[in-house]
Image (cartoon, rainbow, N blue to C red; front, side, top):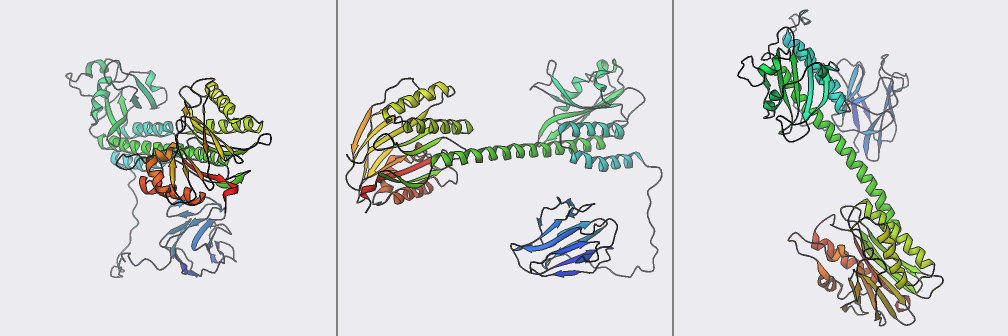
Length: 544
């Protein structure tokens, strides 16, 4: 971004003089007021119409709630919302325009003019009073394009298209239909998505043969030759002629513009170009509408996921801290979507020791995220009530199995830390990823007698595995998102790479940082397939 001065250059018949502005933080007011920095004396210009200011390293324009609005490169600006400017932008304030110039238009091609024709006569050209059919059709295309482009629903688009088709072809009705199943022959279902005049479909049927022929992607018309399959049957209903234009989206037929007449005569060859143009414009408008609708869905999803992710982060707690006799460092890295990793360190006021837990809810999305929050809340309540880890994990499994949807479960580990005895009791529910790093950086993988994931079987009793901690030992817990991440070759990261990365590490923070860097180097992805949670903890008494 530049901090150069800029110039507002009046264009065309605008009577103002060019105005140079400096990036000094002062606001330039454009308007009809005598005190405006750039005065434009016209009744369509508001007294304080718009403002320019250099802020945060760039120039920006703001419409000040003017009566007739401000445009930037032909697009209307939202009132009182600043819009950044680039050199060469055209600012419109009806009836005049200005160019925003920062002296960076060296690449522009300059058109030379001369006064050699000054002696000639300039004649104002006026359209003929009698318009040809081609001119009428062109005018319809031009005027309807604005309303079609501005339409916000599919019904608005196709209704306007049907109306314009009737006006431009002189047919008596126009319909936009689509097939509701893969077939286009007898028995296939069709949906009416637009018509003009309203209710015209009730008067007479449409030619399925004509629609089936247009399904190949080419415009077709009803031939007067009886050899055309639809001719006799459709003429028998009082239709004198019909045509069908496929409405394409990319290379696929999305719908059909069908128009016909019952009285008089219509030359369908003469209206072919017009009707094809209408069909193409319809396809482009529907594509634009669908793109906006998909973008809106994506925004809503991302907002929901962001909100769910914030809840997940708050449930995770602090990335480093101490709880009673335990200190820890932790990192949680979100995957492609919200999943359900769980981590917590809990010290009960009614029991000695500290309970550490880490888990992963199956699946991805908002459902697992919500279940993760429910599991965390339930477990915290259990532990706060003084329930020991062995019973708490059993109760938690019953809680999940009675509330989760079919097939949903969680791998889980709970570790009761007895600092006085320097022991940890493990209760493993299908988790299995642990290791210990001693005070000089040696790594030892831990085998734990595990049980099934929580939420699978009610009243399952989980066995305990006890390990001892030497002075300075650190316990490393991590979710399967780390061990099971795959690289471009499809290889899994695995516990052995985790152990190799931890060799020589001396602190909890170093443990977490090493494994985070390992994941980045191995996967080379900005977003990982699953949430990744890494935690390192040790006894507070061992910190030197």
